[in-house]
Length: 275
Image (cartoon, rainbow, N blue to C red; front, side, top):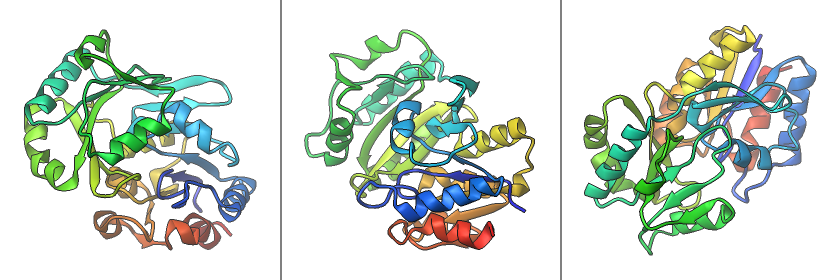
C-alpha cells in the first residue's frame, strides 16, 4: 500500500496550457480521501507553488526549491531548510560569467520573494517568458553580486541545452560543495536551466526528509515527474513514475511510464495504484 504521492508541477500536474484539469483534481482528492498523503515536490518556490495548486487536496508539507525547503503550508512554518552559502553563491556568479552565461540570484528562503539578474541574451525567449510570468519578483540590477548579502536559495542561469550540457562537467568540477541541477525549460524546450544548490540538496533528498517527518518508508512512496531534476526523486521512491512527455533520461530511470500530462497521466497513476 502506498502512503505518500509526491508530484512534480510543471509538465506533470500542469498541462501544456499551464492548467490543472478536473480529472487530476478529482484523482488527488480520491487519494487524500483514501488516507494517502499527497504533496508536491518541485523546483518552484513556496509562493510560486501555492499559486498554482490551490485546487488540490494536498495534505502533507510541500517539498520546494528542488528539495532545499520543506514547508508546512497550513501551519505556515518551515520543517527543513538549506541555504547556499554566500561565498559559494559569489563563486557561482563569477564562474557563470567566465563561461559567457548570465547568472540569476534568488533571495533567501523560505519566501524567495525576489530574484535578480543584470544581463541576459535578448534571443533567450525562455528567460523572457520566465521573467514575464514573475514580473512582481524579478529585478534588473547593475550587478547581481551586490545582492548576495547573505546566504541565498540558489544561483542559476538559462541557456541552450547543448551549451549547458557541454559545460555541465566543468561547472561541477569548479563548484565542489554544491549540487548542480539541470532542468529543461518548460517555456522553451530548446533551453535548459542549470542551478547551483547547497550540497546534497535534491528532490530525492527532500523526499527522504519528508518521509522521515511523516514516518513513512520510501518503499511506500510514489513519485511522479517528467524532467531532469526529477531523476533522483524517482530513484529513491518505491515507485518512480515518468510522465509520457518526460525526457528520455527520466523514462529510462522510471519503474513505470504513464500517459502524458495532456492525457492526465497523474490521474491514470492514481487510478491504477490507489484503488
